[in-house]
Amino acid sequence: MREREAGETVHDTTRERDATADRRDRIADERDAVADERDSAVTDREVDIDEILTAAEERDDQAEARDYEADKRDMAANLDAIIHATVDRAALNARRQAKDDRAHSKADRMASELDRYTLADVGLTERERDTARDHRITDAVDRIEASNERQQANETRDREAHKRENGFT
Image 1 (tube, rainbow, N blue to C red):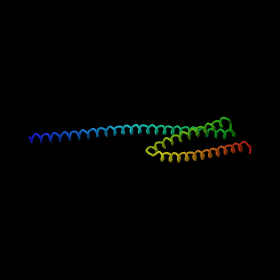
Image 2 (cartoon, one colour):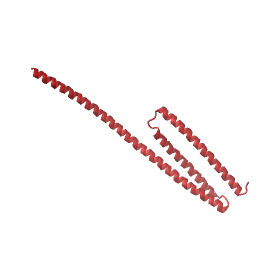
Image 3 (cartoon, rainbow, N blue to C red):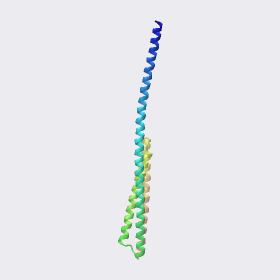
């Protein structure tokens, strides 16, 4: 009888251990499932980040190519003005096109910068993101205003040079 009671006690203990082990296995499986979901989300985020960076780099490359073309048009317009001692319509159009290209390049670079800032915001709280966004907007506005002032100064200088060259002083 005692052997039977001892056997039943061992059997009960074994059952309890098996039940505990089964619970641990289920908990481990649930943790693994959650970890797999997290890994999947991280992988998706990495793909998104790569796409954003690739798009930003492509925009930067386009902006650089556009600036190069604008510089070539400016040089051609300047050579025409020197050779013909006047600023003809084609030269003015070339300069206008160069100016437009530079404006598009500036917009592309700003969009690329915003994409990179978006990536920098990953992991920030909403308040930190808002503060960072406000600072970036202020910086962007300052850069645009400075660029516009430089552009106006260049246009004024070109008009004055044109007047001097053509005797309209």
